[in-house]
Image 1 (cartoon, rainbow, N blue to C red):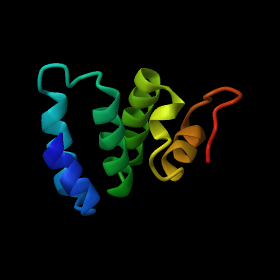
Image 2 (cartoon, rainbow, N blue to C red):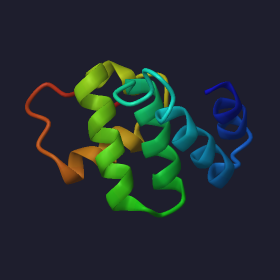
Image 3 (spheres, rainbow, N blue to C red):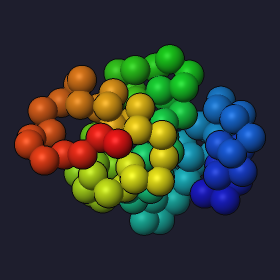
Image 4 (cartoon, rainbow, N blue to C red):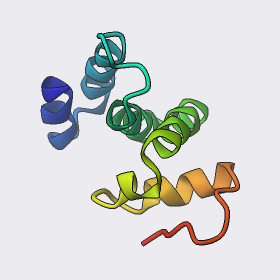
Length: 92
């Protein structure tokens, strides 16, 4: 995850995506909301919107709307275009 985060922060999205794909296959990786969040964000940035929606929904289901609080609101806004997240779901 650390390598993926470094690549994410440097906006090396293809490399970050590869790192997070590896991380999801590690013990306790599958289902980790943070890993799914980053997978969804990198997929979004790479233009893979169906994959992004899937991964962002996994992050939302595992971590709730708060998992999106520290990042650009465009990711939660995008997810809202793909899924009914119900009333009260904030999008900064």
